Image 1 (cartoon, helix red, strand yellow):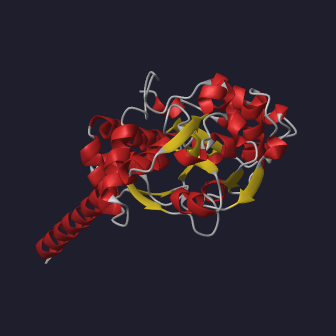
Image 2 (cartoon, one colour; image 1 turned 180 degrees about the vertical axis):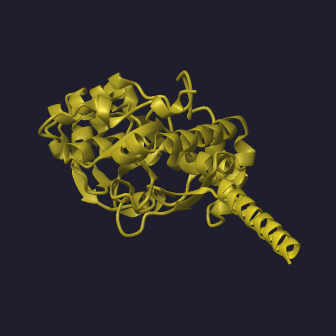
Image 3 (cartoon, helix red, strand yellow; image 1 turned 135 degrees about the vertical axis):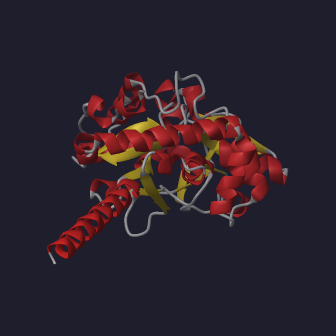
Length: 328
């Protein structure tokens, strides 16, 4: 009887230890769930994120990443509230958010230089900011747009008051420029590439060629202050994998473009392939490593916003961004 009790006890202990082992293994394999919210619909600015997910870079860091598009609320709002751990934003948005004491911080620049500017069809004959006079500009209704137009036009002693500014929203440039506007804000990696594919002659006035203060980071990866302070290890792992994703996209533009297309099949294949080849050289550009951000870039653009009365106070830029999570 005693022997039987002893054997049963051993079996129970063994069973319990096996159960604990299985539980431990499940715990070990369990990944931290992460939500990343995009700034807009998927495009080649986001390729590194999809690449890091599809090639298992996030999984290698113990992260289970879900990439979503903004729905009810912007990426800034969702990240600030903690509904998403990471997001895609812009230097301008982060600056404005921090003035309102919204606790978001930029943890990596997706593209090293501003590749945006003003596009117009070639037959409009808009070759310099002086040519903006007596033309219709189609924008999304931000006060930053008029200030940017003024900054460029002032350098050529042109009058921004002679520009008719129309809020056309996010309407396709090629559709809206055919009928209602003469020029609009666009990006080389999208509008510029699409113009070449469609064989539509365009003129392009690049912002950073006219004012160094407008060579700001757009887009950037953001998180919230609490995440950056309390969960440094997770942020570090996320950025390690994200960095690998963008480095892969830089070295393998065609393969990474296919990954983006797999995740967003609604996109135009030729546009994505050509856009990805263009951005392969732009992600890191002349920076020491992908994601790197300079204090001077943040200060220059903040001062520009302040001087143009778009913000009524300045921020501590060293709290607005960090390279901490990109360093090995």
